[in-house]
Image (cartoon, rainbow, N blue to C red; front, side):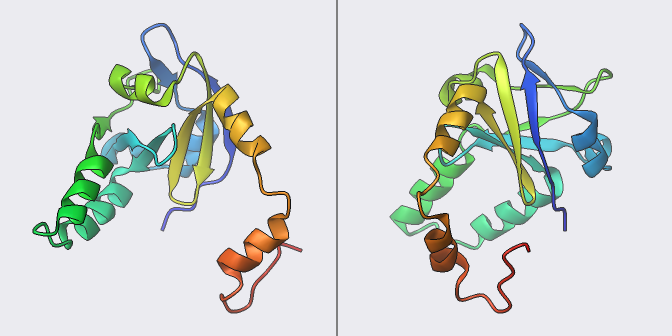
Length: 155
């Protein structure tokens, strides 16, 4: 399983192309062969998935009962705008204009690795999101991760 690390400060060029940082490409050795999928995030951001990760998600979605209205709404909303990306010879990907408009992404972009995917944020929106980190992060950690065995606080 892929575990991506890092935050990358990037810029979109005038055509909406994003240069994939070399440090991120090294973590995705099969990216040129396998490809990437970009989609809307749950917040006002985009998410880039390695194709193998996207395929697993689609497999999970295909197990949902499509006769249930909430499932159909979720599938429709989740997959809306999903687009295959491929790196050009210069190591860039073209982010679809409809998706960058949805996420309010301007020229300054932040890529934030989140386990097996990469969130794509407008730089200012990302900084604003981090400014909203819960005042008591330890309480949030306990709530979210407290039931996990062997909780390791990173020390």
